[in-house]
Amino acid sequence: MTRTPLIAGNWKMNLTYIEAQALLEDLVENLKEAGHKADAVEVAVLPPFVDIRTVQTVLDGSGSGIAFGGQDISEHESGAYTGEVSGTMLKALGATYAAVGHSERRQYHGETEQVTNAKVKAALANELSPILCVGEPLEERKAGKHVEYTLAQVEGGLEGLSAEEVKKVVIAYEPVWAIGTGEVATSEDAQEVCHEIRDLLATKFGDEVADAVRVLYGGSVKSSSIVDLMQQADVDGALVGGASLKADEFAKIATYNVAA
Ligand SMILES: O=C(CO)COP(=O)(O)O
Image (cartoon, rainbow, N blue to C red; front, side, top):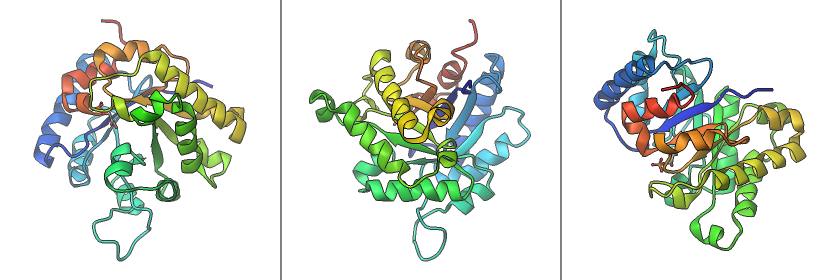
């Protein structure tokens, strides 16, 4: 089984819909110029909710093959949940993905393992692929507990899912100490944990599932670090924050496989 690499840009709380349109038009152009082949490397963007309609309009008929998704999703289907956005709403816009359990959601919005698990299920119920984000804070890494900590988050996030459902999940390993700090984990650090994640998937859900699931690395990814990361056997792509806000840099990252 060969997994199609995924390079996803998490815009976080950046870009008005007007800025989003300009960035995306530039990105489509930059990817074309850089020789991006959508069937070789999948590209996706995760805009703020209010930008998604604009993103859909720009991408529709662009022939770019760029997918998009939410940075979050409500665990609920509909009703009196002020401020929330449902899977049905995302799906209706043509979204493919929903990020779930990003460390910023866990840290600043108190999202527990249970909530994360419910959101994974809400995404799947709406035929969206959850991008389940996991990864340890600095203290856990210093204590040598990074694998244990991260695998517990993977287990918690996938609790109660069938093997068929797990195949649709993307897992993003994002060590908290490497997010927005300029501190990229070494490719070996990324490989170590991504490999352990795949091993866990094999043990719990079987080899076929472990072979199918894409495991991404995230944390200060740049065009200068992507090639090494992608050479690792268990790293199937990247979840890119800051560098996804620059069309030329993000296009370079997404075309890491195209000879210069
Ligand atoms: O959190 C991230 C992506 O979800 C990573 O962000 P940076 O690439 O800015 O470190």
